[in-house]
Length: 323
Image (cartoon, rainbow, N blue to C red):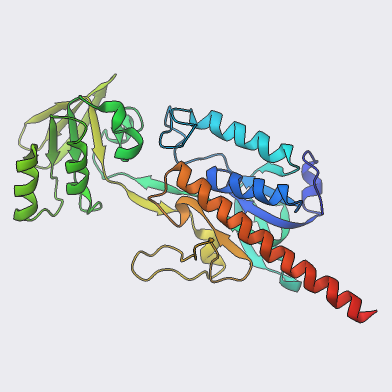
């Protein structure tokens, strides 16, 4: 066992880690703390690109509501290393199962790490519809999660931009009506049948069928430009995104994927179809808020301690039998 918190980078490759966690967000740090507290040699490899990095605050996390994401991560890193965990800044480029069942991970700085178990908590990227100007307002005026940012824009004029990449666009438009009496749903090619249109209209949502050509943002305001020359001035924009999981590591290990969602399949504790490999957080659950990702990481960490302990017990018994 190794509980050293601060070690030279060159020594990381010399250790066979009990667990290497790829991704140092809420899921990865929560799992790391569980493993480190259980006295397992645990290394977190983090590329420092959290999904909510651009956001000023996070919400929905009991006792941490409104906390800046950077502060949240810094606090988690401090807790993890305080319990003896080790953190390194790098990106994992490749992984394979080496001799003896140990995993070998290749980093972007050419280091090679070895681990008895692996947790992938790499998150995802939110792909926006191809609307000029939309990305420029991301995380300031443009949002995708009503549960994360809806309350903060209550009472303001809101535009919801639909798209073919986000089948939940109509639901998003209806939900935003809970926060504001002025919600315009720019359908923008989203499929919305007549029955749903009737329900939205009756609920107080204004529907606009012309396509969106551009979004312009100025400070705390925005304008949605339409292809018929019309505009929708607003103070907040919500849009459904396409989640693009950073699951290359899991794919390289041939982890099974759900045939419908295309996401890597995990059980309730985050175990994948690959023995010794877990996954938690947005990489396998795009809907997970920070608190949900942390919980999934904690569950994975507990499962990993049990898995590692079981192997240590078997190895101890095998050594005794051999003497």
